[in-house]
Image (tube, rainbow, N blue to C red):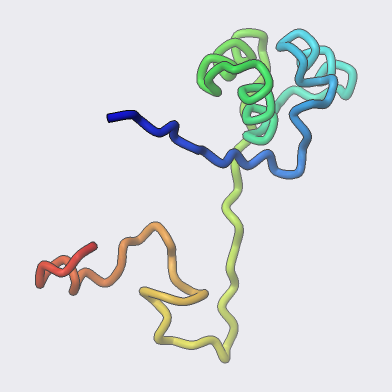
Length: 112
């Protein structure tokens, strides 16, 4: 039995990992210093990890050791208006995708 490789889609947030600033940790630090930035975000970590073949955790640890900080990742806000459907708590555009549902399927044993 052969194992199939796991395919993972990485979100770079509009950045290109082949840019010069992601060539090495030193290049990225020089990029931050030139722009007078003291923090980096998740997009930078994904680009560096993809380009260097290292984990985001090890890159973050190295950058924080140099005095840089990871910026907070602000969740995308979904505002519900006055005329929004009040019945989309568990599904639909107003629902929270990480909630897991209402629980009725888990209670009666039909959970996927």
